[in-house]
Length: 217
Image 1 (cartoon, rainbow, N blue to C red):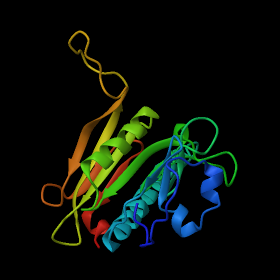
Image 2 (tube, one colour):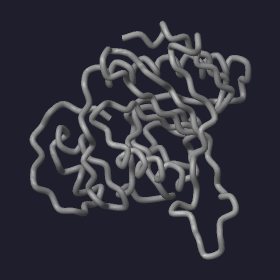
Image 3 (cartoon, rainbow, N blue to C red):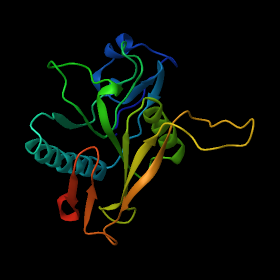
Image 4 (cartoon, helix red, strand yellow):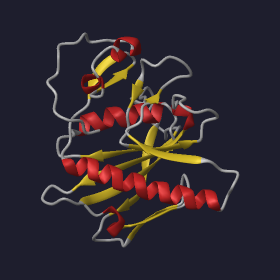
């Protein structure tokens, strides 16, 4: 998630949501709480915001079309919205770049991981693989069924690749005494680049059909 450049103050290693709310918005907006631990969000370039907005708009369109064909289904798509883990409390959350979730039964309610159908991250050159692996593992542990990664090109203002992952809640056979580091994981189920595909097409969590011109900078 990209944020404007603001000097980081000295903060304790752990905070509660209530303590976070007392910080200025320009500071609090750069922080996620991972089980209460303060995690600073890396800032991205203007392209990060532009492609986050473009992909959110495209997914909104797809969700509306899917709901038109199934009036009993209600899905919302948003960007940079907090997702809270667990059934209560707010001191454990992340802020994906974009997400799709089931419509809530009242306005202004917090979005819990159990409500979320898809989360996605737009990867800027400043993102490290370690950062993304840790965040992805939190999404998987929470049981969010679909995860997307959007990689930006390094030499031009363009998307280089979109990858879609599906949650695998069980792991394969391992040697005796060997255990997976994470209890759940994501498996790559789709990959698209402007060079090898005309469109991004997926069936889950709803029918998705997005042309590359729709995502142009």
